[in-house]
Image (cartoon, rainbow, N blue to C red; front, side, top):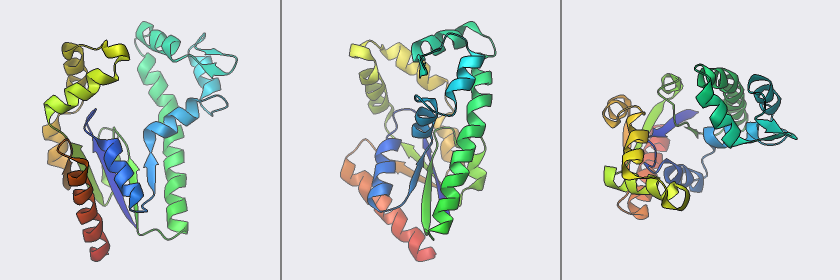
Length: 200
């Protein structure tokens, strides 16, 4: 089984590319969705978050705004949250890979925004980085803000906190470009899948 690591900067179009892999009947592990599930009511992370950050969980429901406030108040808050979440997400990822091996998948995808930052790219057979023109990404980020409340400056600040596109590209095996058309992205994914299956 070949493991495809999928990553990219904010608003690069990674979710679109992940959906294209799913359309090719390739199982995808979505790290962001896993975090949301772990933090949802009844999720495995909720009680520990309540213990680490008092007042952020009410009646078993995580108050994300309260959590953001708590993280801002504690100098080590984000590190403490990551130390809690990373092992839980890692366990879910390993269970996903075991299931893929048991069901004899030829390919699977790990959709992880921080793939390179956590070193998981070293465990992948192929690393795919998704890119889009900067103007496209900035526009997407500003649209995500509540009622268009995010400014261009704030959008640039968000991108500046991430690993640079140059560094991601340097460590990638494949770069898929979005922002032109969905058809172009679909073609790039289709060619990649065909190439990997042929090589296997």
